[in-house]
Length: 250
Ligand code: HEC
Ligand code: HEC
Image (cartoon, rainbow, N blue to C red; front, side, top):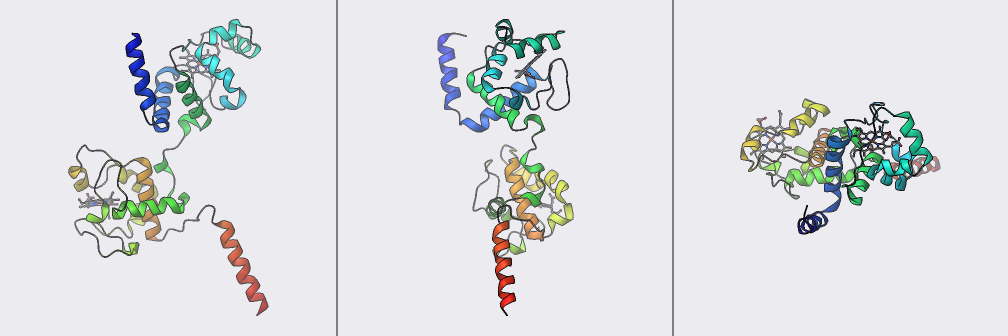
């Protein structure tokens, strides 16, 4: 690569909004360059299982090892030498072209459960936070916008608990949709929501997994699923204690 091209590439990479791209990049690098020899939580392949690697090794060690395991082994580092003898059929290639940011992103990915990480929409609706339900409500009503620019659901659907006058009638009333489908099937449905909506969508961009989860959580709450609000526990306890105390005084 020429210096100029490298410069442009570097500028392009630094200009990208950091976090989401880093994670997406880390996933791609792992899949393309590492899974030939490593699993994450599925046991030894050609090299060690990488689950928990960020706990058993120091970050700086991992960074130098990924960039050039041959150098670290040659330097006589005891951990590296032991690994080398343990897995002697094949050597790990040096990945000198990976930037510090890319290696950091891969290590963050490993630390955050890597490939066993669930997409947000695979969570059960009962794990939703109050904030997620609220975002789902706003998306449904069109008070918040979909990243893909998709149409708000209220144009074609109503949900009786929104406190908003009737929604559109092109699609069915969704007040009970959560129980009609159940959690998993609703997740699948929301991956390709409504035939009408699909054809109306400009570029066919689907809901993001988080948007899909927020909507599912909102529909679950609307249908009456009890969702224990995380972090609200102590508040309830205090209220209950006060009620109990008040009851005791009477
Ligand atoms: C051709 C096979 C191969 C590929 C591809 C490969 N590795 Fe390895 N890796 C190994 C082997 C073998 C070892 C054990 C040390 C040695 O013999 O070099 C290892 C060791 C490691 C270790 C140390 C594990 C520990 O328990 O301390 C890490 C971290 C690692 N690899 C990360 C990666 C990453 C990240 C990628 C992708 C960018 C990758 N490896 C791609 C073969 C591979
Ligand atoms: C342009 C109108 C339109 C929009 C906008 C729309 N839908 Fe629909 N939706 C429909 C129609 C029509 C049906 C029934 C036929 C079908 O399933 O495609 C439907 C069906 C559904 C069903 C299945 C209901 C059942 O009882 O089987 C769900 C769930 C649903 N939509 C959710 C949503 C959500 C969530 C949104 C917002 C992201 C949305 N829809 C936006 C028109 C729409």
